[in-house]
Length: 475
Ligand SMILES: [Fe+2]
Ligand SMILES: [Fe+2]
Image 1: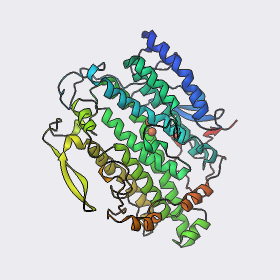
Image 2: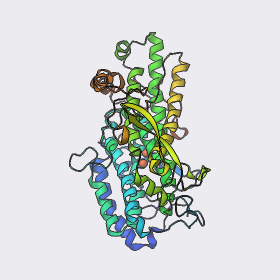
Image 3: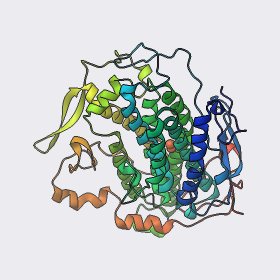
């Protein structure tokens, strides 16, 4: 079951050939997907041979095979983790019952919505990143971008399989609509706001893969607990791919920082103008990018109080992060949780029923996780002997959903007037000048082993290849 059948049009480990109707429906969707990839996927790169990894099994060890492939020939397919024998629902009102192999009628609408919302983010990020290949700082980075892109494409396949197999005509229509909405399109945008933002430069790309792909990780972890077993199994395999995306982000930002602190030491300065004249990205600008991407991403977890979140949990559709490792009753009926409220313009804590605060619970778990990488970035700065610390901003900073929406709060968590906010905002969020400066650095570096001036080379290559390996053949 863990082996993948590559002899079929659609590689899969779900015995697709045994379900002719489903196979035909997906083979009908496949050319539309490829057309979307041509139109909205990586710009001007269809003919490149890219050193990509492809899934060949879902075993934790050795699932990937590396080789040069043209992206349109990438074998996008349907890969589920192996079924757990007699898996039981382990949270919510159905706890202890057998996990569902099909969709219960009463949960159909909610499950469809969850799957469509997750599915919509996958092609959205490919669209957001489609022009970045034109300004890659190295072949190594270009290859990593493309790897992320093809895997987000595969994540779309993972969700489309569920829609086609379990949701009939509605599911097929949703699968079509996933190719019709487009990131940033005024008439038919992607569902979630952060996925309609631009990813205009490589610093944004690294921030996106660090912060926003990590939101993906937490959503997938919550869905990997689901009572709907096919959803749990497919998200578990998606998580193994997601890990690389976050690596691209963490190491990418880390290398930008490394280059900057090297220049600070060479020039013996922390003067922003001098550092910019030297063509590196000053640390305060990096901090502003962190503030932006962190705040936009934590909005993705939804409102801090949500009856939908309670329903999704109690009915077994979506668990908490690492539900299985928690020691409470997994029903949470009498439990409470602290969220932030605003009283007389000040932030105060307020206790609410935990079931209604499960978006906030997931957001807080995310925040803890995302601080880890920021600390590792700080170690690069410390090691260079430079007195500067990067931080994630306060949870209430620059929020656009729930109780905190629209509040004016500093990155340290101090509530303030609109007037003060307007005076300070350029210290806290990337200004037009910051963005223009970063954009001015973006240029294409194509020689193997060469790197743009604003980023340090990685310590290691991909799949134990040397850093100057020919990761992309431009043909
Ligand atoms: Fe994804
Ligand atoms: Fe991802």
